[in-house]
Image (cartoon, rainbow, N blue to C red; front, side, top):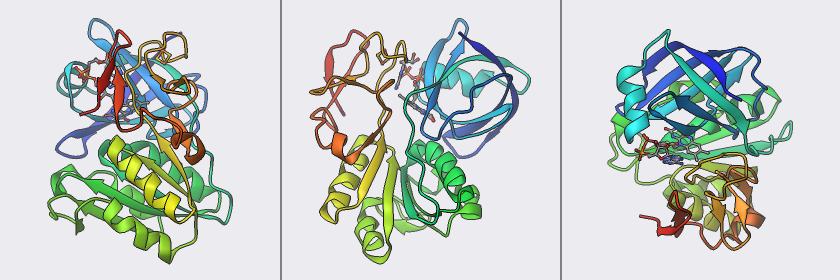
Length: 266
Ligand SMILES: Cc1cc2nc3c(=O)[nH]c(=O)nc-3n(C[C@H](O)[C@H](O)[C@H](O)COP(=O)(O)OP(=O)(O)OC[C@H]3O[C@@H](n4cnc5c(N)ncnc54)[C@H](O)[C@@H]3O)c2cc1C
Ligand code: FES
């Protein structure tokens, strides 16, 4: 069932990402890490992580990529209506009160991690954020993270803002200096794999949010199935823990196209 949503506010947050605040009625409160399917009639439907939620309002951070996201960026304005299904999937396990946790984001992967950080901190946990972007022009949500996190470490590939390189170059040092109960991560799959490897080496638990092409989003069509366990990203994920991630042979290697055929990850 589709829920109508009105764009209450939208603004450009970085060279690539626009933020959309959608006014919704009767939306089931989502847990951080869950996603919605956003349908725009005559254009298409895409999966998007929830970047924040409070009663009556859903925040989304949308990067301009292909057909649908370009339409959203270029044509949709405040007051326009879109349609949502969800919230779908299994989100992150919420950090325990008084625990320390780290979020490691790559690009738009920071969006669901922001919602997690807000909820985790509001429940009494302490959050550090390690956020990677292409350049200084791609940064978004940094001030929002700074308002709630103990430490925010920014990394850019060109060194234009924060430290130079990839978030994973700095992860081992942070793990050695802090007592994180869990590292939560979302972003390009190579980043997730590297985070898992570094955390496994020192016995720190990981939860990672994966992305796959989605059609039904409710576990029926098989478009998002991961080998060899047959897990569906839309229903059994998109968030998976270390124990499961280690067993997914597709991770970092294979996607499926809309016909279910396996395609090599670029
Ligand atoms: C669980 C989940 C959460 C996501 N959260 C975000 C987010 O918070 N912000 C964000 O910017 N992006 C997010 N994405 C990626 C986003 O869905 C794609 O960037 C978007 O679907 C691309 O659509 P497009 O038409 O612009 O691109 P095109 O390359 O033209 O896409 C072709 C078509 O593929 C379909 N499609 C379905 N699923 C996907 C997918 N996973 N990736 C690409 N295409 C898909 C859509 O119908 C799309 O129109 C998320 C993806 C998943 C699976
Ligand atoms: S999108 Fe249909 S099973 Fe996941």
